[in-house]
Length: 124
Image (tube, rainbow, N blue to C red; front, side):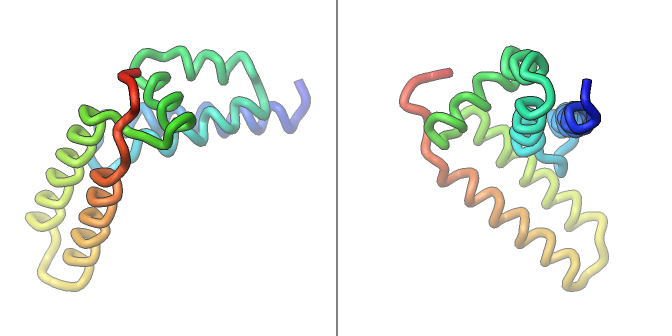
């Protein structure tokens, strides 16, 4: 395996791992890391790319996003709920000030962007 391929596979593995963490942690995104993982894997190991896409918990979401730029309603609800929880944690844990409200405003923008994405034409 060439060094460049090894680097692509390592980046894919790191991104995939971060995406897995994002499934369980409110402030950590999942989909973006999975998209990065698929991209990196496609450059370094097509087998790894196929493996990522075959995962039940992420494969259909990736395919739907790539084909239609759409997010299923259930995924949107889960993401927006976790963002709301994150905003509450930020409000509760940070002192009054611009950082607290800046983070909350950023989270609201992300939630609005997610909520306004179209839903897939067919269920994945």
